[in-house]
Length: 116
Ligand SMILES: [Ca+2]
Image 1: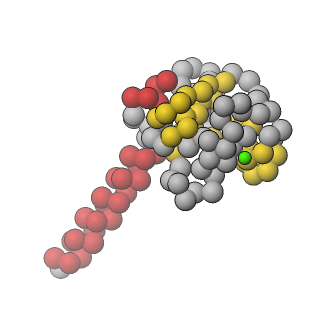
Image 2: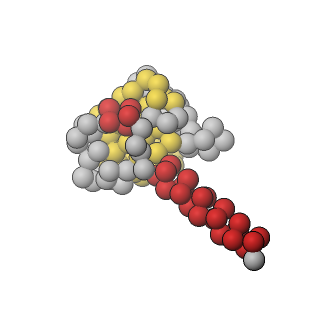
Image 3: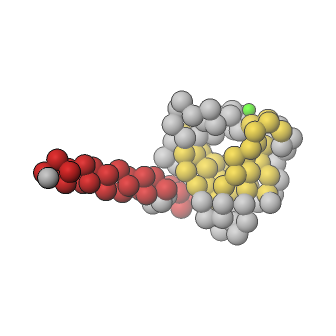
């Protein structure tokens, strides 16, 4: 019985930590102001910061170097792995954001940004 309670507690802790990653409470996420798509070169919304209000067919200064994203628009944005909206796409919903671990193939891969 004690072991079962331990497993349940561990599962609850795991759920809490996943939610914590999904909620961008870090102070620097607030750099992403209203109606902007945002990116940072480091995880956890840190490092050099960029924000955009329209489509970008390339991302000068951010080529294959984005590790955190944020979307403070009311519509989706999409980060593409190649310039000109090519390659694979990573879509970020309105109000969403997050960052990649270094083994994630999306980390340091983006080259263009589309506003849906
Ligand atoms: Ca790329």
